[in-house]
Structures are given as structure tokens and as C-alpha cells.
Image (cartoon, rainbow over all chains, first blue to last red; front, top):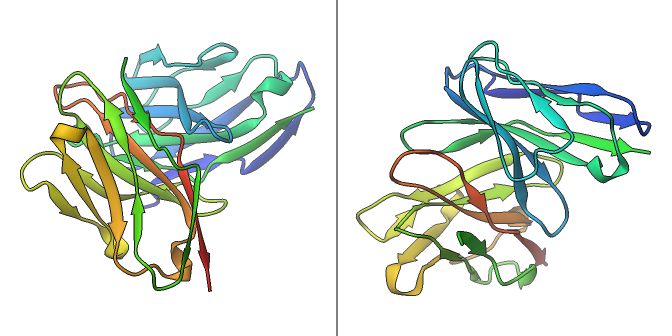
Length: 112
Length: 114
């Protein structure tokens, strides 16, 4: 039982490049979320999903896309990376009844 | 507007001393309340949670928190801090009426001095 896994752990991009951050969970949770963490700002919700095929925007969705083709996977795509997207990204899988969140180890992204 | 406030950006305590981290929230109804801990370079881990009932909840690693409805607060406490408690602590709220969007505070970084 791996919980929530994220890849890669670190990534450096140049402005304008695109990439996909991977997230997978093995807890059979319907709800999943992507957050970004910036100093002094806590975690901000980027996108979330309430089940396969259903996604919606969070607080800071601009510049990011998501899809949810299976219950297990919830990738986050950066379409054209910008320096403002330099951050640590966390994926979370959420237990529906209690709203307890299970976080992955994070991806540290630097955009030059 | 819904929000979570952690007034202290960072706190330094001596090992063995007691700890209290403050959390205040603004929410339409009594939400579910959480404290998470983040060790350096790690993801967040749940310390404890409050849903209903006894307003004093116990968590892992010897932490407890008290929900005070009249003050809209959910402060985290530990009687005796260990050096391994040095980390960042996040208070969070989530709806108790369906839906799951969680609002996080900005975090309080705890430093422990020997």
C-alpha cells in the first residue's frame, strides 16, 4: 500500500516548456486535489476531482490543466511554464466521509 | 469569507517546554477541523482532527487540540516538546455538510532549541 505517489521529485524547466506532474493513489478515493505551496501562503488549491472524468478549478487554476481518466491517476499539466510557477506541488487523495487528506511527497519545480 | 488564520509565522521553544500553536477560523458553520504537520522536504501528515463531540481531541505524537466554538479557535498543544517536533504546522478547515474543499492556514514553523 503506497498511498499517494508523485513523480518527479524535482524538475527544472525553462520558460515556455511544458510538462506533466504525475500523481497516483491506491486507496480507491474518489476525491483528489492538486495544491501548490509557496512560502508564507500555505497551500493553495489548483484543481480538484470528485471522480473519474470530473474535474474542476480551485483557487489558482491559470496555467494548469488536469484530467482524471481513472480513479488512481490525476496528472497535472503545465502548458507553458512561467517563473511564477516555481513552487512545490502536492497531490492529495481525500477520504470522502471525513475529508482527511493524504498527501504525496511533493514535486519541487523551478522555472528559469 | 472563509479563512484560516495562524497568527504566528514562527515560534521557538526550548526542548521540554510546553507548546501552543494558535488557529482561528472564519466559516459559515462549524467545520471539520484539522492540524497537519510537515517535516522538511516532506508532504503533510495528519496530526489530529475534530468532527464533533468532545472538544478536546488527541492526536499522534502526543499532540492535542481544543475546539472553542465561541472563539472560533482550534489551538494545538503539546505538554513537552521534543527536538523532533521541529516542523511546520498547518491548521485547516473543511465543510461538514458535503463537499471537501479544504482551506489551509499559512502555517507556523516551530523551532526547538536544546
